[in-house]
Image (cartoon, rainbow, N blue to C red; front, side, top):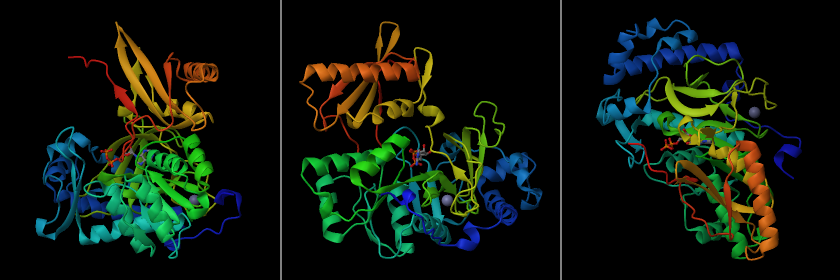
Amino acid sequence: MTEADKSIQFQYRSPEIEKMPRNELEALQLSKLKTAVGWALRTPHYGRVLPAAGIKSPDDIRSLADIRKIPFTTKEDLRKGFPYGFVSVPLEDVVRLHASSGTTGTPTTIYYNSADLKRWADYMARCITGAGCTKSDVLQNMISYGLFTGGLGMHSGGEEAGLMVIPSAAGNTSRQFKLMQDYGTTVVHSTPSFLLHVEAKMREEGVSRDSIKLKKAFAGAEPYSEDTRRRIEKLLQIDVYNSYGISEMNGPGVAFECQAKDGMHLWEDGYIGEIVDPKTMEPVKDGETGELILTCLCREATPILRYRTRDLTGFYTEPCKCGRTHRRLRRMTGRTDDMLIINGVNVFPTQIEEVVMGMKEVGNNYLIVLEKEGVLDRLIVKVEVGPDIFVDDSRPMNALKEKIRKTLQTTITVNPRVELHESGSLPISEGKAKRVQDNRPKDI
Ligand code: ADP
Ligand code: ZN
């Protein structure tokens, strides 16, 4: 039985803030926004762009609506500002940095002073407590450490919430369940794709469910469907909580599901969220989907205002059962820049995931490949079958292939070629899953 089926005893780390009446929360946001604008004015980038937009001092922000006077910040701006264009404190006060990998260009780098790190750990601890964990939980942090924010971010939050943290990092699957057995792990943090891999490996190596005490998983860092969540919950008999983070807003701990598991509470005393139409950049109507814009209110060393996340989501309009007043974000359908254009049709990889992960005959992994055939694009969907199914058995295989092909064609209106592969044979990645291989020649 999952937590949602039971009558839940909701728990809070900072109930006075988490359940603060909206008018007080908004007053708090306004005062923190002014502080953040003050920090930003000290950076070379905002020191230039804010006065040009008429904001010369924090007092030029008089209401929350005035946030719209602030220009958007893009990843490109951060790259142009490399290395110190967004830093607002003397470098001697910086105690840590995190950076994107930089394999696709100049890295974007975020700097933290010690108060920033404390605040980040506090938001993260709020998420962990809100997901029902207590000091007696053992958290195995199965995600990359290093420049990536997921590892150290969750690690510090776990310690702050009083859990015992095992810094196992990602990879080395067999060692992961050995650690779970040895130390009685009750909760893991991972990407959903790695969790599915761990589960498949456990079955392959005959590790019994009874030998581990796992109760929960925090899954995030990449988009995944509700079907994938249900699949992980069923296979591992645990509760899975969706976790949203982005390095420009510190990393994990920005928005997280509470015990109701029904949308991710955005900590609005730490981050201001807006949803805009990515074409017009105007706000969408309440509850509609658009691009998430985030302003960081809790980091002095690298303040970032109105950041274009490219993530597509929307706010729930109904209040949450838990009584928190901080609004909830819906599961993200992907980023605007993840969208594939296949023979002129727009397709999000998550639409394909919803179809394949919803079928019980399908295993835990899939891959989307795009090729050029003459002038046309060809979509190939490679799908692993479940561990008890043999790909050599041609009749049921053909029927399954046809079922996947037809369902995909109806949902995405593109006719794919479907390939079935043995369980465990498609590539897995230790970090974020690489679900798309686009082999089409790039336009010059
Ligand atoms: P990068 O930009 O290199 O991927 P980040 O670690 O900052 O580095 O990744 C943040 C991005 O990861 C988000 O903008 C979002 O696209 C994705 N992401 C993180 N958590 C989730 C989640 N729970 N659901 C969907 N996407 C997520
Ligand atoms: Zn809630």
